[in-house]
Length: 590
Image (cartoon, rainbow, N blue to C red; front, side, top):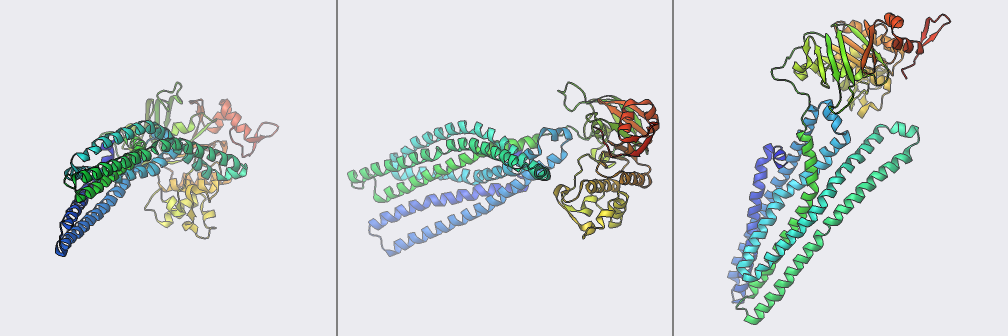
């Protein structure tokens, strides 16, 4: 885990190494100051004059200023290293998430990934900052102070030989009990973030169904669970304080009692006043170092689970990768499914898709109809290799998709998914996802083809209108049209519309399909729809049922030969007395 995190230091390794170097200088100088003071006290007792005292004063000022300088430099490099490390680590995790396949994404919740990128990395940053500074300063200060205390106080310094192991064993016992509690607590943060994310995204639904009280109760329960479990952990870690205080004051009492006794009994021969005052100072420094170590221990205990969670995200490898020597050019939009079966998980007992044999010619328009759960979306997601087949092969342009460079393959396929997603930015910024170098005229053209221009021109800022995160300030139909425009701008070899015109009226739907035929005639168009009117003019229609292809044909052929298509068609169209179809309705598959 440490090796994995270390890789994120990169250009900040120099600051990471310089921090403990300056800390060593700071601690060494701080350890010398009490020794110089002890010499000063003894010389004053011996009757030293003003000149000698001023000489000591200059030495103390110089030592203090140098210690301050080293401390300042240590702080600067520590801040630079810790913030830089956190930046790199956050970027590394985010970059790895971008490589995830859909299978990898299914493994983590979005709330969990957000927690790992924010709270967990912040915990690691705090721990790292303490490790490169406090973890060096406290032990060094402990060693230097102990050596000087032994030099000045002799056998009396052996009290620390008892105190330090006692404190160490106590802290270890606390850690062993606190760590499992922290391990249980962090997934609760994920659940809390998930609750917030769901509420913010679905706030309109919450208000429409007057479920604010329910959402408040759910949030309160999640918050209470976090409070309860972290209170248990903090209750254990709170024992650090009493244990630390007991060791500190016990040591001080020991030094005061036996030091004073030694001075009185020996008349200052075994231990003089300068030595005694210095021994007290070093005792305080030793105990302060132990307190630093205790605080460091708490932070590392708290952040260890965060580090583990971040490393899980870093170690996760995409289940879908480009092969060696990949094909980088997609010759055509032809699509072939050859004996394809697919399961989302190897442990799944039943495949989602079974025995799919399908051949789509380049430039052909294909409609796909089927009931809920018939695996329509799963079928098309295999084309840009968002998932890999479990059996068989999917070919694009006559080449197995597993032999393509992923970027080259996905650049040739444009998908408008069921859950349309717009990002915070202007309308033009969102449409440019199809082509980042597109001119405003090109953007206007695809928006006209997608029937989006009619509502964009009515907006005060037109194409500079700001879209809120998730497109919450536009309607469902407007969002769908912008996503279609984005896909058209890409001019792909294959265009997949996954029920992406469900929120627009049948007239607009027909206009969009007509525009696609004229704007990208050579592009293979695959349209998943719930409305038969959206696919009835397709070259061929595929009827899906239970993860299998039930029938393929034109609308007229399927009306005569396929029960599923005929039932769907008739349920969405009014019938006259002779059974002839009348006016198209707005019905959808149940």
